[in-house]
Image (tube, rainbow, N blue to C red; front, top):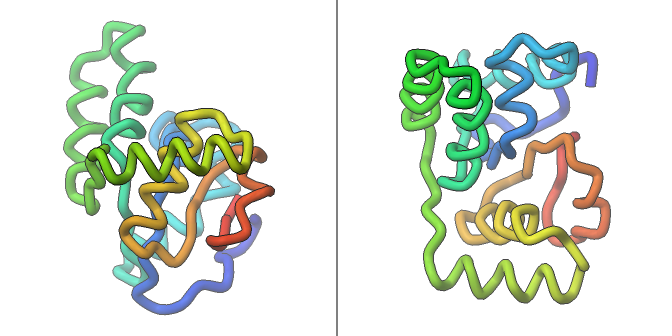
Length: 138
């Protein structure tokens, strides 16, 4: 993804933890997802994030003892639409895990994206190749 992918104006994108970590931590794969983050910064698209992704994003800074970085990451992510893991999403995730053989955390991401009628799921995880019900940007 070297240029901004084709997405509708004002699209709602659920962003998985990987792309967020790449951008926040200046990872080598940042360039792959930077155009989407720039589009979000310009108000062209809207981002959503799951509470489980927030936890995953905060693990790295906390492991390194970087409390301020963890707080900054959380503050940024809370400006997006936050999708909590509730019983309906949990059941949907279980069904997706059973039918698509996804890892549980990936099934939660997909179920959350479907629950909010997201236009796409942004991820670096290849496990979503079996997900036919939602556009996946990777």
